Length: 286
Ligand SMILES: NC(=O)c1ccc[n+]([C@@H]2O[C@H](COP(=O)([O-])OP(=O)(O)OC[C@H]3O[C@@H](n4cnc5c(N)ncnc54)[C@H](OP(=O)(O)O)[C@@H]3O)[C@@H](O)[C@H]2O)c1
Image (cartoon, rainbow, N blue to C red):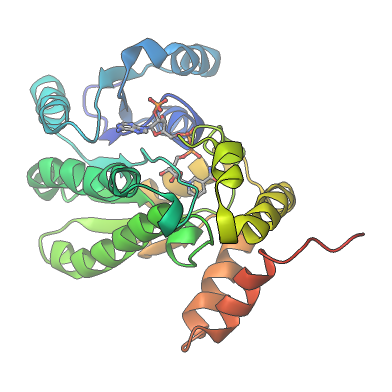
C-alpha cells in the first residue's frame, strides 16, 4: 500500500471472487480494503495475501447491516482520505421455487444481493464523486437470463442490472463510472453455501419434483462444462477497475457472453424459454 495509491473497497472477500479480486487489486497497486461480514473467516484471505506478497486492509462489513456499512466506508475515509472504487461482490445464492419457499427466504436473497448493493453504493457515492471513481458490481449472467429453481437470486441480480443501467447515465454526469460484471458458473463454494437443504426440499416438492430432480442433475453438468475460476473472474473485475472507459456490462467468459447475447436478442422470450425448459427435462443418456 502506498500513500497516494488509489483505494478500493471490496465486499465479501472471505472466499471466491471477492478474495481473488482483493489479491488482484492489491497486486495492481491499489490500497485494498478487503471487507468481510465475519472477521473470524479472514484466514484464507490472509493466507492468500501472504502467498501473493501483498498487504490488505481487512475490515468488517455486512452488507445487510447499515451501521457496519457506514462504519467501514467512514473508516476508509478516516484512514486514507479517499475512496476511488467500490466492488460490490458479496452475494448469496438461492434454490427452490415460489411455492416451496417462505417469503422470508426470498426477502433474504434480495436483501443481500440487491439492497446490500444499494446500501454500500449509497454510502460510497459522495466519496466516489469526489475522486471521479468507479462503482463496480458483481452481478451474474443469471441476472440477465432467469435460471429455473433460482428465482429469488435471479430476480435480485436482475434488479441489480436494471438499477445500475438506470443509475449509470446519472452517475456519468457526476463523474462516476458504473460497471456490472456478468459471470457464468464459478468454481467457488457459492453453490454449497446456499442456505437450503436440497434433499428435504426435493422430498417435499410435490408436483415440481420431476422437474426439480432433473434440474439438480443438469446443473452440475452445466457447471462442469462452463466453470471459471474466481481468479479468472477477478481479471474482469480488475479490467473494470483499470480500463480507461469500461462498458456497462462485462461478461467474464465466452459462455456468459453468448448467454447474455442470446437473451438480449430474444425480444419475445421464446428462445430463452426453450433453452431453460431443456434444463428441466430428463437428462439424455450419453
Ligand atoms: N459462483 C457462481 O457460480 C456465481 C456466478 C455468477 C455470479 N456470482 C456472483 O459472484 C459473487 C461472488 O460469489 P462467489 O462465487 O465468489 O461465492 P462465495 O465464495 O460464496 O462468496 C460470496 C461472498 O459473499 C459474502 N457474503 C454473503 N453474505 C454477505 C453479507 N450479508 N455481507 C457481506 N458479505 C456477505 C460471503 O461471506 P461469508 O463467507 O461470510 O458467507 C462470501 O465472502 C456473488 O455476488 C455471486 O452472486 C457467482
